[in-house]
Image 1 (tube, helix red, strand yellow):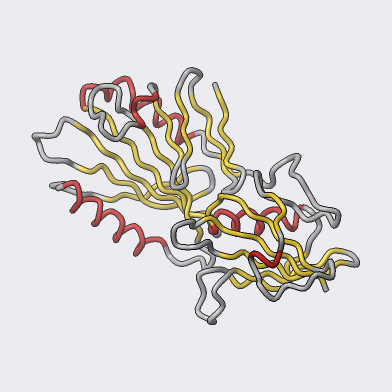
Image 2 (cartoon, one colour):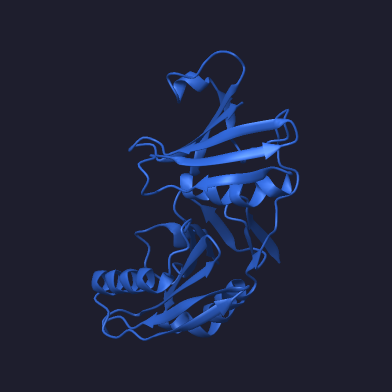
Length: 260
């Protein structure tokens, strides 16, 4: 069995050896055949499981989110019947539903949602009806393997012991904050990760690296701050961490660190 660990959202799944895994900006996919990730393939090779993380910094109840999500999905697919049920896995709780598609479609669709603290995970399983006996038990086993990690090992840190997300590189702070001063008190990092995933990363990893979070204003917020802001302390270091949303055509989050 292979283990997939999402370094930002902080969860693990175990899936069969030989299966294909594919990550993109929105979700992680698991399938017996990599052709399942081709959107124009609807045949026997298209069975797949998708997992998508979502940031819930204000810990909003997920029932309204689930109702909106499942209703939109049903309308989009022309589903006939929906019946939600409670769903729990890996110390997370939520809802699940089998979506009954029109009879002319030979596909079976299952959706689920789980919430744990500030993290929401969306699941979607799709396969042909005749594949159920073979594919569904394996997809169920993958979902049942869900585990949340306390921290990620071997992360890169800066000279102050500040953890850095995978694939984030130093950039000139003035490229992110025009009024950043060139006095060594500013640091900036850029990469390609979702701003919600970055918030989940720092909410989990900063305490593990002995940084105390004294203030956390998540993004989005209702206090007219157009980014996520954290006040953090570690020994002699005090800093403000800003996690900025990217531009519209480049939604990846950016990191700015200002020491005091």
